Image (cartoon, rainbow, N blue to C red; front, side, top):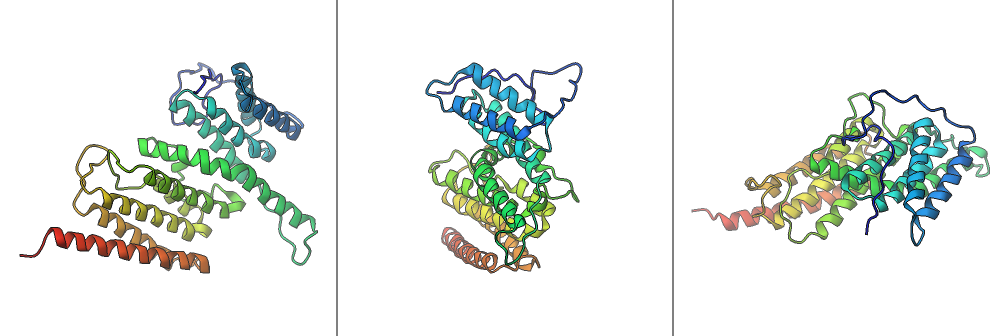
Length: 326
C-alpha cells in the first residue's frame, strides 16, 4: 500500500501543474562545501528510511526536502547528480498519485541529464591500464552503470512514456534543432535509453493480452526522434530503436484488427501494414547512415528487416484472403 507524502517543495521544471505557487521567487541557495560527504550522508539516510520495515513519513519528507535543496543549489555537481536519481526513485515507492510519480521522475531526470552534461570522460591511454586516465574512465563507466542506467530503465523512461501517451509535453521531448546532445561527452549512453524504450514496450505488449485499444505511433518515439537529431554519432542505433518500436507496434496491432484507437475511433484500413512500412523506412535510414558502420548495428538491421518482411507478407496474405479478387 502506498503511503502519502505531503511534498514540501515546488516541482521545478515540470510539465505538471502545482498548487504550491509562490508570489515571489525564492532566493537561489548557495551550493555547500563538501558535497561528496553531504550526498553520501543523504543517500545513507534516504535508503535507511526507504528500506525500513515501517518507514517514517517525517523522515521521508526530510529526505525529499534535503534532496530537492541539494539539486537546486548544486546543479553542476556530478557527485550530487550521480546519487539523486536513485533517491527520487526510492521515494516514489511512497507516492500517492500519478502526479507525484511524474514529479519525482522529472526530478530524477533533471539530475540524470545534468550528470551527463557536466561529466567528461578522461582520455584513455593506450597500453597502460594503470594510468590515471584509464582508471578515471573505468570509474565513470562503473558509476553510470550502477547508479544511473537502472533509474533510467526502470523509473525515468516509464514515466516519460506515460507522459507522452497521455499527451503531455515534457522538456525531454522538446530538444530544439541544433541543441547539443543532452548526454554531452558521453553520447553513447543515449543508446541505452533507446533500448530501455524497446524493452518497456515489449513488456507492456506481452503483459496485455486483451487491450482496450491499440495505437498507431509507439510511445517513446518523440523522445528518440529528438535524441537522434541531437546525438548524431549515435543516430544509427537510435533510429534502429525507433524501427524496433514500430515493428513491435505493427505486430501487436495485427493481432487486434477490430480494436479501436485510444480516442475510440476505428483503426484505419491496413493499420498494421502502414506501421510496418514506417519501420521499414526507418531501417532504410539506418542502412544509409554513414555513422552506422558497426557490424552489430548492421546485423541487427538485417535481422529486423527479415522480421518485417515476414510480418508484411503475412499481412498481405491475410488481406488477400479477406478480400479475394472477383
